[in-house]
Length: 66
Figure (tube, rainbow, N blue to C red):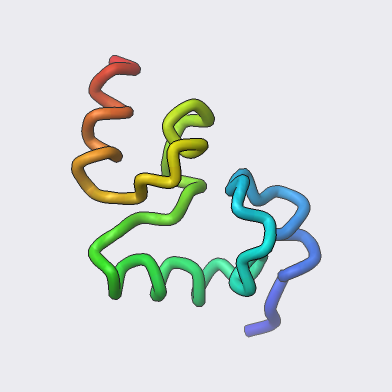
């Protein structure tokens, strides 16, 4: 499969722009899951900016949206 880094980078909503995995979604997801976290793109904008990528922060952020 061909990596779509240029296209992914344009659509990436993570505000941590110096991340080496930016635009390489498969590596980003693998890195976060290995740390029991989710990537920033899974969070609503206001929650993403906190850089708390925990499952608990994910559940809290989306429960407030409901």
